[in-house]
Length: 339
Image (cartoon, rainbow, N blue to C red; front, side, top):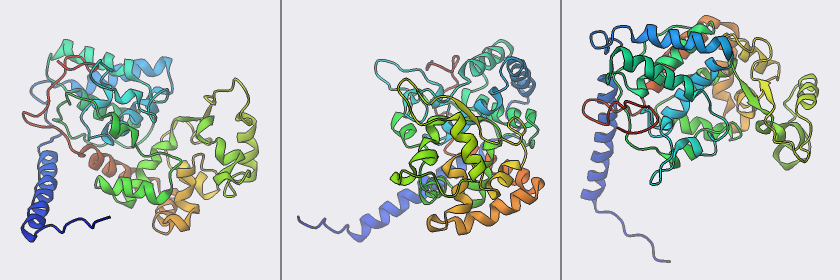
């Protein structure tokens, strides 16, 4: 096979310049976001989001974790642009249908309720992408976690990114691959470990951990890093796959305080009680780069204040991933469809 031709020096310089401009453009767009973006156009936006979520929480205690997860899954597929919320059409595949999202992400009706309330109060003003960012912060705060001033001013994408959603960070991936996916969007190891702390609330399905319980790395043995008592308890909840078992039974991501946003998630990991492979690997997979994440796990386990501060910082950075601003995109009237 012939070797590819070398690019001329001028072409290499041009490519470098294009990449630099792209990075600069992303930074400029992030700088256009502001906590006070809606102060004049929709001054009660935060209170409206909080009221709807509080009402939803009454009948669905899982909703806080679900809304937080929606923001993650939106931002990691083409940026924080509300594309995850779009329904499938004859000409567009929805991110909701991607493998990491299908049958897993939830909370869309609550987002629709928030949008409807805001359309009543200030029609055509608040984007769906900003609703996801606000809902994530409100959910963390209501669960007992930190408060941060949400950067606002995103606009909504006019298309979904199915392929991007197919490549979302996967809890079964190696720690090395996960760290790279976070680094690729400008999030460092501290951000990565802090954002993993979102697992201090919420649940995961048995199918997410079956391999750890019964056939880790095709050894026909459980993951050796799992605490034996924890392994036994999980096997009771998630028996070996049987005909008719769809693996959708739920397990607390943080068995100590499953509905409270705190730092016990990291203490669990130190006791080898991380539910997902990606949780425990931050401490127990030195061959995959845990030497850089394990000390951070330790710091967060011993200082909830440090975890909270790092989580808030990481959420702001994540919310700055490739936002649409200015005249880009649109402000959808209905989060499920383009205008």
